[in-house]
Image (cartoon, rainbow, N blue to C red; front, side, top):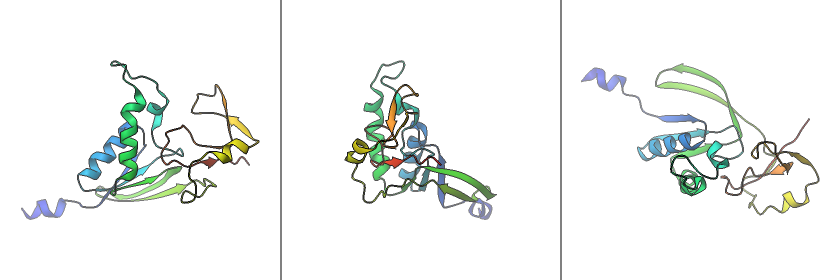
Length: 159
């Protein structure tokens, strides 16, 4: 019994990628009592499923499936979202990792942004929209999609 106690690890979990699988994994882990850090490289969680209208093979509304999970993930006390972030380094051993994360600047204060969209209306700069598969343009200050979480804008600042 002594070996079991020594090998049992406690702590937090890092989930990389906040698509539907990462969101569901985070929710399951958080509901099991783990502190979860959900890392996403884009300004909002949701991944490719947020771009879909319907899902295969049931033809269900993709956003109808995903929206409740976005809200639950955003409100869960055991989940900390790290959006617009990149994993830079992993060190340590199994059960005891240390990571370095680089958080890209949003140039918008998440605590102050209400998601009203007024800034987007007056922005004079247009960029190609990656979310819309480069078919249309978007403003340089943007929210990836209407139901995006966090409900805040980011500025694409090109050098």
